[in-house]
Length: 166
Image 1 (cartoon, rainbow, N blue to C red):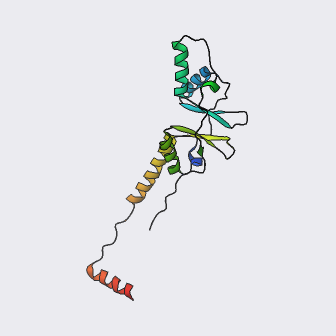
Image 2 (tube, helix red, strand yellow):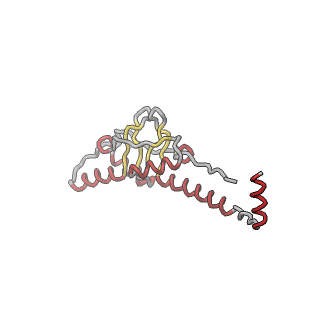
Image 3 (tube, rainbow, N blue to C red):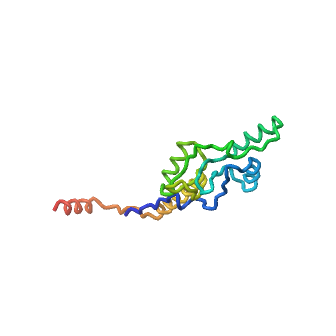
């Protein structure tokens, strides 16, 4: 008897209440929000909620560090420091596809978009890891409840073989 594992989809683990920015937000807004909400990245969207970029702690740190080090009194916008090449996850992927996506691209989070590029949510490595942990625990619980196979005597084995030959 084989119990079929139910593999979660990205749509089941995404965070739908997403903090996102517009390209005209200032970098100081980004730093404040990152620190306030303890997040490390966020999608950048246009007025139609289409993902047009992605901004990370690294982007913000480089910008703010340079401004402070060189004593510049400017406050660049998100558009000037965001990554315009955005790796997006698909809601229909299963957890293993998502895991592979994160590993291959060396990223820690990604916006989840619909077929038209509209933001649906965000998913992180932590979300993927939690889903993998739940899957592993459900599999382990299943294995713990398995009964040992019945051990047949030599006589019983011969009878079974004879019956199978008929």
